[in-house]
Amino acid sequence: MAFLSLGLRALVNVEAMNMVESVGNIVRHRKAAVIFRRDSSYIVRWVPAVSGECLAHSYQSWLADLATKRGLPVCEYCAKHEFVKHADLKIFGSLPWEQRLAELVKSVESGRGSKRSVDTVAFMHEFEKTIVGNCVVEDIGGFLYAGRIPVKRTSRFASSYMIPALDVIEKAVIETQFQVRHAPTASQSWEQAQMTYNVEVGSAVYAWSFYLDLASIGCCTAVKRECLDLEQRRKRVELAIDALMLMLENRLFGAKQSRYTPVVDYEIVLTSLSQPLPFNVSPPAMGIEFVEDTARRAQAFAKATRSEVELYAYTRNKDLAENLRELGIKTFTTITEMLSTVKQRALSMLR
Ligand SMILES: [Zn+2]
Image (cartoon, rainbow, N blue to C red; front, top):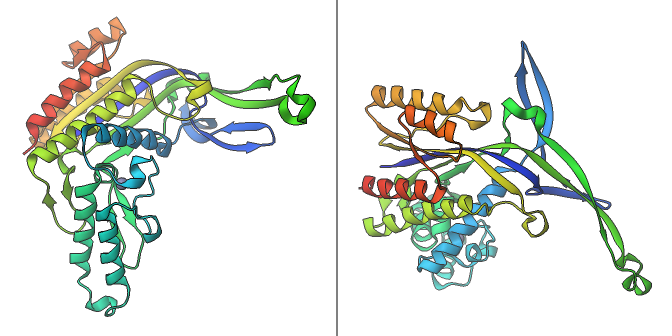
């Protein structure tokens, strides 16, 4: 049993990680309404935000790419970073196992007998087992087949929106960057060749929460628990943590990287690993005190539930590192070292 939770704060400048619409020649950044307390009242503000879907897309893309490199199974669409996840028969891929599953679905749904005569539970289990066995992205990231007998696998990971930390929310900004495509000769042939456009960019101290239920990777749970062998589950747990490491260490997440690669400076990345019960890191958006709050909660939770909760952190700030050590948190100066240590420990927890 092992459950990983992570909370981070990062100073991010000039990012266009999550754009939502084009209006005329303006491309707009996603915004979200957040509420925070000031003195004795509450304030509402619309701030730049990066959706959980956007970050989940990046994470699943890394899962797909790493899995392919390691020879772990990935379905046709997930391998292309199109996470439609067998939602409908029309988007089942052409791999032999996907076609066999499509045949099974058709035979169940074709009315060879009414819904009552179909062993629904057996069908749901067979569906989940087939997909878990053959696509690690859907094993870890879940799926929803929305047919006559719907089958759902809840994602083993969860991602919050990345929003400005509430303690420094007054410093979060969205501004419009004016751009011109300079083309004096081409515009003689095509009027629109020389073009102005505007891109909204965000800058803020962002906070993000993420968790990964490592213990149930490689295990069916829709109607009954049935797991792949331990060796296969270990490979997938390694993959799940390595994909997170690749994404965070190299700051490869969000859209519009080609011309708006965000300047990301992590303040802290705090990770917890717990067994047998899940423990979540406190929300990093609430202020840097989330570290102390997490440490206090971890201790109380471990004692009350007889669980194990271990904390690991990454920071380059020497004062913060000193505080972390005083709180008994293992501290690292690279995300790679931190998550490699977490990975080895998590693998030793798998049964
Ligand atoms: Zn897939």
